Picture 1 (cartoon, rainbow, N blue to C red):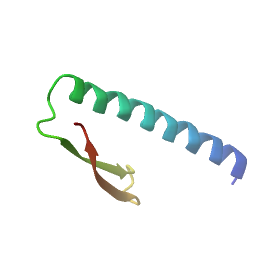
Picture 2: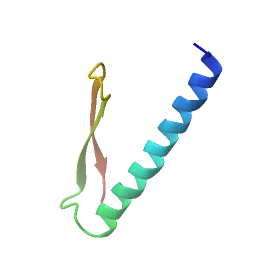
Picture 3: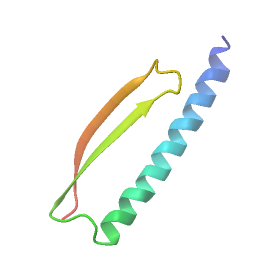
Picture 4: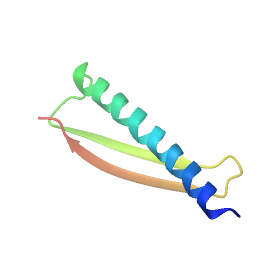
Length: 63
C-alpha cells in the first residue's frame, strides 16, 4: 500500500464530506427547519462491502 497516496485520497474524501455536510446543516438551520435551540445530528459512515460501520452523534446549538 502506498501510504502517502492513501492519506491524500482519504483527506480529499473527508474534506468533501466536511464541506458538503456543513452546507447542508447551514441550509436546514437557515431555512428554519431546525426547531428549538439545538439540532441533533447523526453521521453514519459505511462501506459498500460491509466492513465499515461507524456512527457519530452530536448536538449543534442553533440559538
